[in-house]
Image (cartoon, rainbow, N blue to C red; front, top):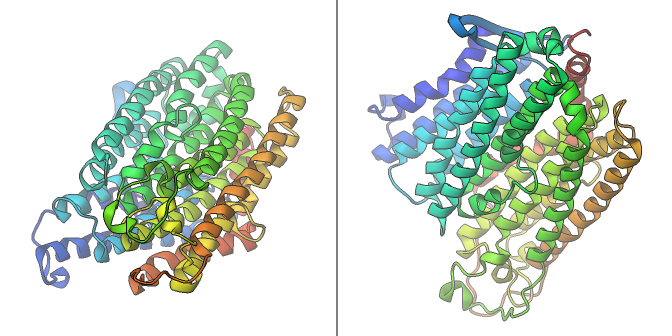
Length: 534
């Protein structure tokens, strides 16, 4: 188990270096480009297999205990250690990261985004995977920061070199926002480590964290929370996200929404809740207020994008004449804004500081990764077929009528939309419901009237979410027959079916059998909130 966890974290780095070497005989394809893309599928497949074996070998009777641990001295003078381990909180995120990266590598093998050498693309993808996996596996504050920052450079280049229109500006905005937030976060992490005398996250969550004074905790939560809020992203620190998603290639959007946003909320749960509970209690009402503001803002922004433009004069000729028009109503941008709303429910659950709310936040994290990852895959497929993601263009004169033209693609888009709006029986329902339940009865010391207000606002946000997603489905999937002369579009291809089916199956499984995930997270959350005493 120790070896498997180390392999899961370090393996992608080794694979990234090997991507620049000549391909072994078993991976040689018809060209060097095909060979390196096969290499990416192979390495991410091995990492996914290791993550699955880790999950199968995990002691499910003790999910609150750190397992598969490695603890090696690295910098003795600062007591910085190479400390790895997983529990019921980090294991689902580890498996989700490995799964989405493998599916992205598989998708790219058949549909490589236009840009420079595939060697660099595969290497960056693997470095990104390693940094994300390390973030969820390390148990030292310094290592957490290093892993947290490790993902920025590969994501920057994935957007800047393989993205679409406006990619340079979007990439710079992404890197500047996240770097500035990280500088402030580093100061907070160093403050905790220096004041407590250790950077070990397990020790801080039990004994040493309680020795921090309230003023130190408040300062640390403010500094670390700002850095984590940028990555989450929390309104109003979200403005980098829509531009990054709109410009990013399909697999970049899938990984950005599916796993990178989770690094911020994971930091709140793993670091701030157990190590600085008094500081969190001080800022919890403000965090909840920003969370529900994000829910409403994201939903209203999506609704504005989903509505037809006032000057909408659809015709089939727009495909050829204006292939990139309509950035205002870009469907990728709409889904990006929806992430602001969905991550607002995650932050609301964390702000309640209750087992119910935090479990809901962790469940919503996984559900968002599955459903939004699927949505970005589907929108990427639509953009490949239509040459644009502009919603007015996709809707056409009488609706794109995907149900009639590409029934499987239309059905998948409708499925992902209703899963995203929280339909009972699918993964999106449980996380948001538990977050609202947590707000109904927040932790001791928090204002119940305030959180009841937040709960009501969040519940109203679910109605807005349903409104814009159903509007998208109506405009894109329904409509009249295809106008004469308009080119037909292809339905779901074999490689797309292979990449999307696991996400569909897991969305249904998590919705029908939530105990699979909650059984892992709940004991770990109970222990975390109790300061490691359970």
